[in-house]
Length: 243
Ligand code: DC
Image (cartoon, rainbow, N blue to C red; front, side):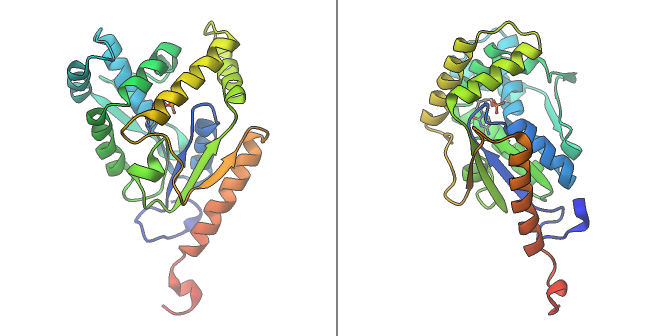
């Protein structure tokens, strides 16, 4: 565990970061994971990898039975020590292949299915239960770890999130157009917020942060401060003198 702190969990805190796409969650979560030497769990990458498996099988995202069958059979592995995620499908590193606009839309569709969510829910709980983890997603603070030690809900305006996604894709050489990217962000928001199972929603006890006009460094500084404060509270009682 980073910084030598102890908590009630074996490896440290469970930190949940939820919010819509393009709010800066990935970069920020990675930075925080590095800083605290925590495991970075990118739950969106796990849903994306299942979508890639569905796409490769040539199955429509509307075919519930086949989608679930493919997801159950998909050989997905994830590791994320010190902020460095590695995700594979059938032993192939798929980090770049899961970031296309087509896979983004298909992911949103398959992530609305209860059976698909249950598959990953168990995996995510198993990976995080000992603590020392930062998970980013949509339902971490509400469903996956409602008892997380620290919860954030990170958002930004749809225009700003679309603009960021556009710049990110453009830098990778993916042919994109700004208007379409903003429209895709809005379409995904609607799909993620309106689904019946584990919709994107702020947990009541999450700290809300709007990153529209904040830099990554500013957001990381605020969040790291909150995590440090929580870690200080979790120090063994011997530090308080009554152990
Ligand atoms: O965070 P991301 O953009 O990589 O997520 C991709 C899609 O997966 C997005 O449409 C929402 C969905 N998702 C989800 O439903 N639950 C999560 N915990 C993480 C992502």
